[in-house]
Length: 334
Image 1: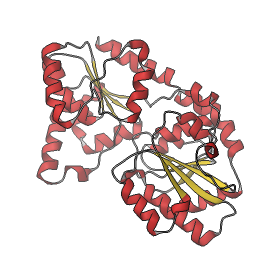
Image 2: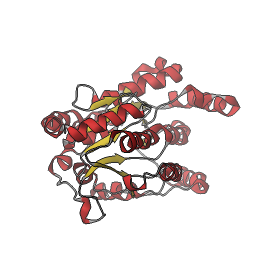
Image 3: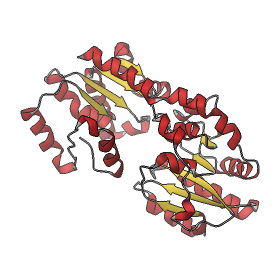
Image 4: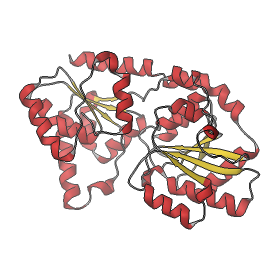
């Protein structure tokens, strides 16, 4: 069960050998789907992704004694629990999350973050497990770089800056816009910085308006989600991840494995991924620092250093290793 989005199609194709059944979720159909599940189906195990889906399935699994794993992909802030609605949300989380059999965090940072906001979970230490996200390293290592000039108009002296992900405030995209503004107007770069932005999100219109007001239309190209992530990453001169907070930082891990230069903020979650790597580290919300890092990469490319680290990154983030660790947790519950 999941909302219908572009990446879901790719996930279903990846799981084809298991003949999966996909139930698309719409707000109006959630309760109807849950009712049908309760009446018609009996699962051996439920794996929920995200706190919301974990709560959605939590009581059902508890009442029907179905083993339940929740993977937490998000970080929490105390501001989320302010006001009457926030207090009620906090109470529900504090009651229902401890009912889950295994709470899987995708980083140590995520676990510490959730503990700091919902401290009651510390009492259930045996239920809390940290297994970092894994990626298909073979695909990233073997992929050929995408030649963007074959499908879109790219200036000859372009310096291609990659951004992949949602257009949400916590992803820090506006700081990338400001950084490009600094480079173009103040620093007179030797190449034309072009941001190729792949993704979706509610704030895309606001960001496009911000770009337009700053006169940076020639420096940003927005492109839809694509399943060719490995080739896309390898087609960039550098990838930026200017997030304010992350649970893990999947794009950063993929970039390190691909052997492509990476500029990333040392925020919660992301700092765990880029630790001891050749990634250029910047402070969150610091457009000037990001601009200086991009200029440095333009003038003194770090591609060789990034390529040398690729093998180490592949060993760190190999999904075959991570999935076996998660599989062990599932087998314990069956």
